[in-house]
Image (cartoon, rainbow, N blue to C red):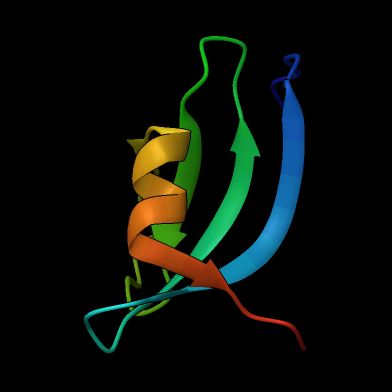
Length: 63
């Protein structure tokens, strides 16, 4: 298992404001990128976006 430092740990689900889509947001790395994966993606591929994109296009689900 690889260990690395993160700026902020999220571990939560966000919902798209425009589409019917859920993403699982993992963490923000030291370069400022948000790492996430799509809930419908069976391969668990890691994607990145900026915090501006996250808060502009998604809202956090409160469970």
